[in-house]
Amino acid sequence: MELVIKTKQQFDFVDITEQIESSLSELKVKNGAVLVFSKHTTASLIVNEKEEGVEEDTVNFWKRLLPPEGDYRHNQLRKDDNAHAHLLAMFLGPSIILPVKQGRLDLGTWQRIFLVELDKPRVRRVIVQAV
Image 1 (cartoon, rainbow, N blue to C red):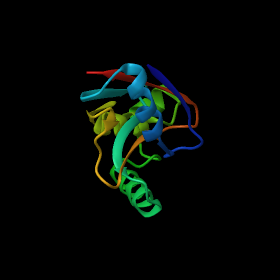
Image 2: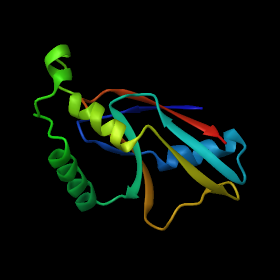
Image 3: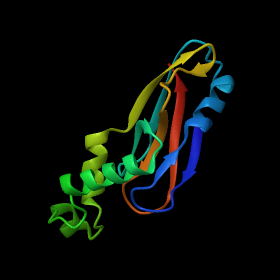
């Protein structure tokens, strides 16, 4: 199954937990796992708490780790100004595997699933597949 998600800004945290949960019945997953995969090189998937402070701290950390205004060869060659987004996506990874128990995601109390936009706003596609 494919989810279509529209992001609104760079470093947008889009909570896709409910969409993934809804897909479980269609995928006929009762117990096992689902693979969630981003089809993009400048967006990633993470599991974390949905809290503004955590998101802000995370973005500030990423900007210190890989500054968007850094001197990157990709930016010089392509004129995209998104090398930091490619590097962050490689660091974070394109996929996650989530446990399913009795037809529901088996997440911790505060855990949510996010597609994180690391580049410019755009339409993103995420695959959800039974494992």
